[in-house]
Image (cartoon, rainbow, N blue to C red; front, side):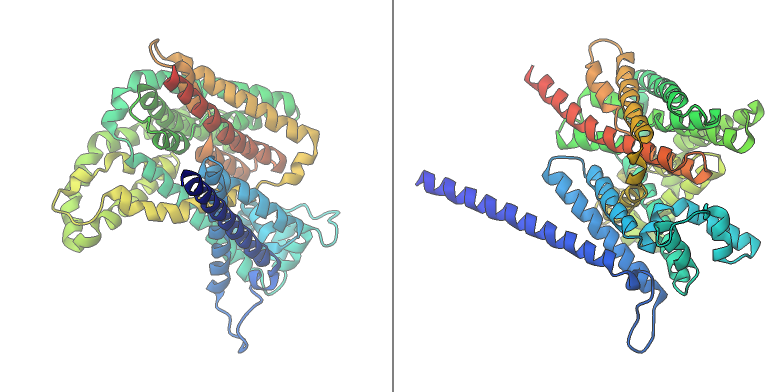
Length: 503
């Protein structure tokens, strides 16, 4: 009887796995059909009566991205890997398949930052898209029917309007996704928790910024000797960040959030994200001016410090005072509308202060808590109300970033060597930072928890590409470093936690 029950359970498990495999195969086939259906993607499709809704192609493109994210996330979780890794990898796969097929939409996403510069020039100069295209892209010696040539042809035809709309929509949705992600991360912490581990977290954070920056700078100097010092500095800056979301997710899944190492890691990750963003602001200043202006640097630090001080010390009082107003306006949706307004407003305010918008979104989550709404407020918690929005829009950011990794650049030994070298120093720099804490805490666990770069590293890479500091090969190498550290860190940290639990 026992054997029959066991055999039945095995058969049910096998059937379940087969269903997952068939479902994944169907979803993959559907994505492939979307990729080859280029007349619809390009906005050439329509009803038999000739009516075409300009938003229809955007809806179809968004459908494909969301299905891709679900496929990548699901398969990654089946393999016990972080969901973000699956979203990045699936983005790399479908992005490069579409690029190799020279489909204009996929080429546009691959060169999304260049397209932004193209549209800006066309808007400000009054020139047509084809005229501006030759200025932004190097069109000399283009091979006929190559991806760039196909994109140029598409921008010369009637589908140009639809392509630009799709590019703008992806830019907007992905930016919205990363704001919501950092806001949700902030909701999991509080200013009091950060203050409690402040000393040790600050030590880990400072070492975790200075050492990777220095090592990244030296690697860029070695592999890119002809590049400028500013470019070397920007490569170093991309290694400064730590992904709060990936580390927190791993500790939560393993039910180890209460251990002291987790508190130190989360506090240090938050602090070195902020420090890294300040470093990013300094490097951007170097890009724009070509030198370090101490007065501008002082203003940057003052604005950043003033913004964070005001938000952290006075933000909770202001947020609590505004709750009755929103309760009067719409009590049933207060835990959704009010947090969104706060997130967007502080993201804008952070940008005005010279910081990245994601810092403001994180700060908004940090100062907001369910206690402010009182027990009489209906509905679930703020986190539960906001999580569905994050689940929809945040994966778009990771998939789109993956789609901008051009695997052709790794055909050269130099690009591949740069990615491997950056990964090695990126892991080493953060791991050593774990040894900045006092004895009595597992330093190796802290070091491994600091390794993944995740979403903030991708943001750094995106900014660098947008400014023209990182060329396509260097950008792809940096993003691949983010992917590798995101893959390596959870495996190593999970092994370390299990080993420490046994011992």
